[in-house]
Image (cartoon, rainbow over all chains, first blue to last red; front, side):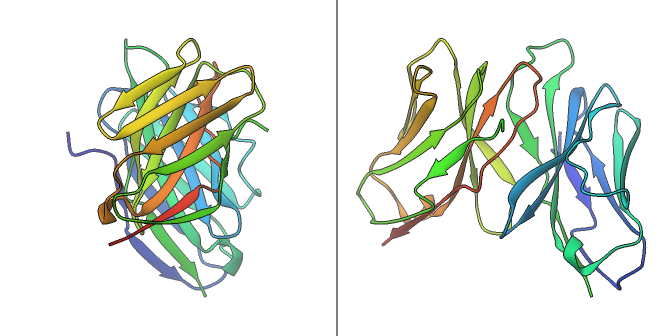
Length: 117
Length: 110
């Protein structure tokens, strides 16, 4: 497996524009996580899914943020409208092979560096 | 808060020395995981220690867990310049989510 794949790797957009970040988890993993990393706030858990269902979105900062997982192999994180304070590195991670133990390591993608100007 | 808090925030050592990083947490856990992040990259899993374990080894890594004190430590022996990275702990509860702190930034000077 190629690991968790995120796209794009870099995104520069103007304030007010819609931004969509994409993630392909490792095949067979039950859990998918979205994180945001900044110098000031560290690594924040935004939302996570189990079997494509959102379990906890309490980390989503505002209604401008939304996440979907239409199937087991794809998830999106959308920001609409974007603001300069959304600039950060966004990571997707997946874990827990289906049918395996629940408490396993998480595998991270390479991240999307978002800059909102 | 379910996240771990790493200490110190930054650590600078000479190559060949040992590096010790600490983690404290507040909730009951199923396991605690340590991750490493190289600059500009995603996190990479290093080691997982379960709540009924006290110590675990993996190569040059040694992790301890004290559930009575809600703390863990990561020891890297005989450090190398390539160990320069940020290190994060993540206590894991039954909910299977992982919360990370701000990490310890380790610099190993050649």
